[in-house]
Amino acid sequence: MENNSNHKRRKHYSGKYPKKFEEKYKEQNPEKYSELVEHVVKKGNTPAGMHISIMVNEILEVLDIKPGQIGLDATLGYGGHSKAMLSKLEGKGHLYALDVDPIESEKTKERLKKAGYFEDILTVKLTNFANILEVAKTAGGFDFILADLGVSSMQIDNPKRGFSYKTDGPLDLRMNPQKGDSGAMRLRKITKEEFTGMLIENSDEPYANEISTEVYSSIKKGHAMDTTTELREAVKRALQKCKIPKEDWDDTYKKSCQRTFQALRIDVNSEFEVLYKFLEGLPHALKDGGRVAILTFHSGEDRLVKQAFKNYYKEGIFSEISKDVIRPSKKECFENPRSKSTKLRYAIKSR
Ligand SMILES: C[S@@+](CC[C@H](N)C(=O)[O-])C[C@H]1O[C@@H](n2cnc3c(N)ncnc32)[C@H](O)[C@@H]1O
Image 1 (cartoon, rainbow, N blue to C red):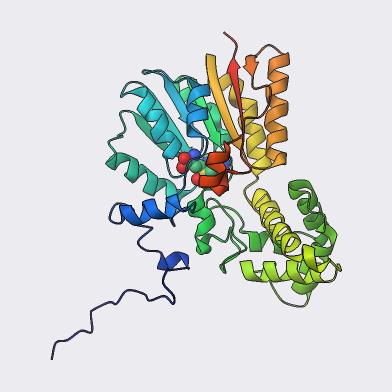
Image 2 (cartoon, protein in one colour):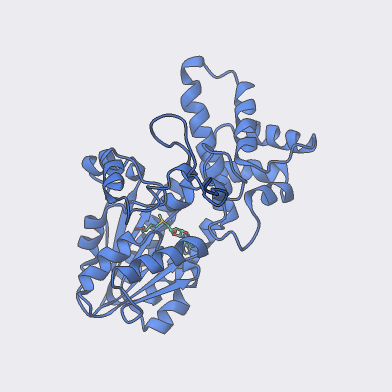
């Protein structure tokens, strides 16, 4: 009889289609299963392990990239925007691309290499965009800069990263899991009052006090918030005490979970602080006449960008700024629902 002890069977899932991230191994291998990946995208979903870049055409239009220019993608992610910007360089010039995520940026670097983008045209750096001035010094200033803020779909969809309340995993939420405190550690270190403040300042959470009271009474009873499920369940218990009308329950619960996880993520990754530093360095990093485009995903981020652009315009540092935010088309929102909350602003540095 044949010895099959070394033979590994693939994981089985119940039902016709895989539901869990780790079961979607075909989607995570787009080179081998390109037809399936195309099918998933056409249905308006993001394949596991992939990120669909947002407002690519609008960004290319405002950045007006010319061959030979030097550019910065401050948030490399899956590399979709980088690829689009590189194609505009037509093999001449250079693109610097930054990310803080050591896991995904390494994969993206390899993917872009396979697509023919080597170190002569592309430099990938594992660094925070708060360090924009150091990178600009090396590059000699930038003709164009893009920042697509927040997290990638690869980060959100991987339960091990702990970004989503929808799947069970460790309450991590760090874009770089090798640095700093995880979400669970942060909750252990701060007070109930600090958590309330975080929920209000970072996410405008209307049930901030109720949620932090529930979270900290659970922690006091010895139930550490170590997993995404534990935090989600604490949000649920808090809202159950708030007498929310039955017809509003699903929406309220979903939004409070989203806002709670967002608030903690912003805190864990110091997102406002690093954006502030990036915006502060921006005028010095851009060459005269250089262009910048920034995609934001929540009002706190957009407020910071809008204010900085307005100030630089008033001071004469920027010659043009977007009058209003530019939003994704209806078609894009339909094809990629994750683009719905996106706001794009651009600016041009004076000559
Ligand atoms: C929305 S995704 C970018 C997607 C990318 N534009 C694309 O086309 O695939 C945001 C990325 O920025 C990274 N990121 C977020 N904050 C950062 C920061 N302060 N410095 C560097 N990278 C950051 C995240 O790790 C994530 O990979």
